[in-house]
Image (tube, rainbow, N blue to C red; front, side):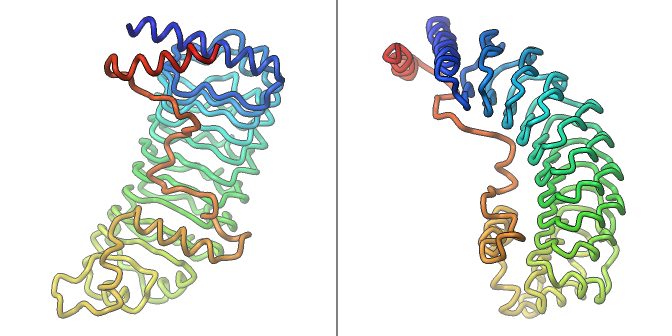
Length: 343
């Protein structure tokens, strides 16, 4: 029965491609079809500006994709790619690219050809380093490299002066480059779950930074009061689950600074309304929800939350309502009838 269902899936995919060609469509959604290869006919979809191929079983991308020169949006997340498709680097009009949740350990230097790229998600791919050529993506506003074994970020990241949102959560960073001080438009910085041992000094130079996650690192050097004073413009500074977060002096600072998050004092006598009122904001999702609400009250030119989702939800680009898994006949037959009635 699965083979029969796959037959209908394949034909439905071809029908969608043919329809896009006939209508000169700008968008084509082929996500969640369990495709193992991209149909050759897609090279004829010359008018496409958006192509969704996420949530499939693709092991490679045909070079003909590089001929779809009008593409501005391409999603390849949640496939089975084991290398970065070189043909993507020819898509010089690309603005949005998601390759998350594949097995892509390196990016080619040609990634720098994507000079119009505004959003790039490369989460949970096994990425070992970010190439210095990323500096050429000067229009990049959103960059996600979380869940990768990155031990450092390149100095070239300081050239991304348009960057407003950077998440490198769950990597293996022991330090961050001083050039990040040049990211004058950065609003949201997530460095949760790395191996940092001190508060990055360049943070004080980031005038627009509002949301900073440094929780679950190894920070054991207590920041001075003047340093924390310089970070008062932050709406959220999360230092919880670091060695310093249990330090009495820092907990007392947290009682007075509503933007500072550390562990609650073990002695309930030491707690006060200011910190107790934030006890329910222990999870990152809850904190980001609060930050999103705060961001909506900010000037639209400074807010990074107006059209955002939680960091924990940034692995996938889900534009399809098709069932991802078919477990038994009761689910399979309705899906097959969906395809049959389309013809």
